[in-house]
Length: 146
Image (tube, rainbow, N blue to C red; front, top):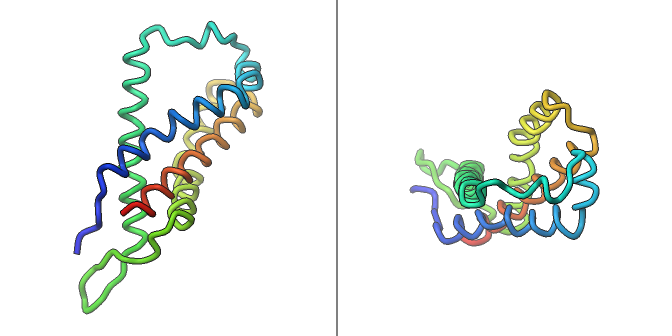
């Protein structure tokens, strides 16, 4: 049995970083985020919107697909000597897997890059919390909507 792949769910989950990012780095934490980098809002406007947002969307699609695969691999079991994919397809279970995948794969990269880039602890914390929340929502969508 192969893992179930709902490509519409993968595309929807790929939109989550943009939606959460617009809210999180916008009205909620815009001032703190900009201050943590010593930047102004004007300095953060992309020079090439198509490349910036298109590239971000492509990376979100890759992340979404990867999270779906990690979720499905964590749902595997063996029945009669054959691998099966079948357990616990709920939003909460997927959110847990998304958050844990983020903590163990994405957060170390964020922190490592941030340390070498000389980012402040506040900036690192803002980015880490954003990605954990984002991956949790993505994982929840991907697991619940099979």
